[in-house]
Image (tube, rainbow, N blue to C red; front, side):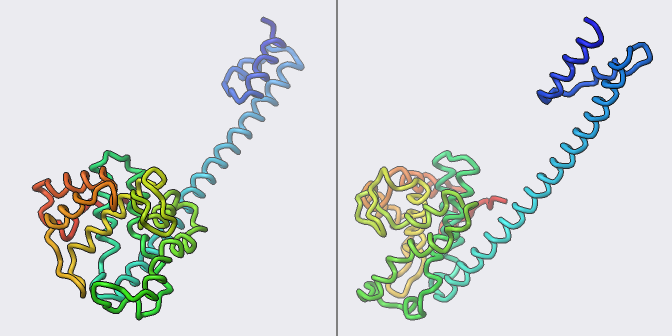
Length: 271
């Protein structure tokens, strides 16, 4: 193959993004003009293009790091708001973190991957954020049954929470977990009365974790149940109030002798 044909082939490779040092073989004194001059120009152009691509990759990497920092800071902010919200009622202090911890463990029992688990944990942390605008009277003890006017406001909190978070698109499916964590497999939940197949798995997991924490912590209208008693209630209503697979996963988690402090729901925190 002559020098010109070789040059044309190399130029075609470069135009396709296939860079190599083959062009340098045409820059020596034995290569006739104008092939040598063109090859030298191509070599210099390749160096400049590669330098620009490297610089662009560095900028993209820095932007990704910045976006991740913004994402973490935003999540920390809304999580702090959720914790402060729970602290308005001494009986629910720490509730959001416990729900997130237990939801994570149920998800692990179900064999979900780390990415799915992270979104479920986020949904657990933020599931009650829709109560952020509630007046103080909604946090007062109302015995075993809330007045109708209180109930009407309470059942809005999943929808309100999803609306508050809707611009944070990096929350991904966690947004739907917030919206749907009070739905039930039998279609008697709220806010949209979704049935089993239409409820996201993450929302089903958070529903179990949320209810378990409510049952096993002291409330003005009830004594804290033991984990075993609470689990019996879940098992009786598996498939109606709560997803049967999630209830089974909760049972496996509670049966593990390493999980001795079930009321605290110990969990490994995702970074």
